[in-house]
Length: 141
Image (cartoon, rainbow, N blue to C red; front, side, top):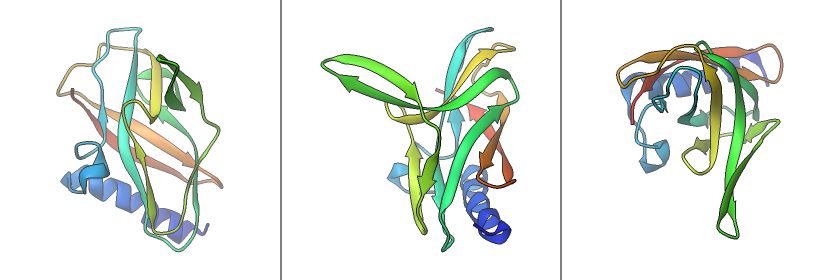
């Protein structure tokens, strides 16, 4: 993917975060992170859009207030919920991928400070190549 195409894809996510618009698949609007206690874990939900003609490949995430962050997939099997790490997320041209509760999400663990409703954290998304985009994420229920 070219740097211009990656920039357009990131811009789509940032515009969504800034204006809070989108469709019903946007997990309630702009990116959000659940509240968490000091040392605890939380999850980030958002929709990653790729308006470009090139495939976008998300490889990971970093969150400024967490000791570790990664992409995870939740699932349920025989009534038991579980989650596992995901190496990458492919977003096809002119498509989107939803990061939502009980599904794909960015998991943050070992938060350095309690996260309360109204806080804002910084998440960096790392793509194939050298591209890394910064997104401001609101802490809310």
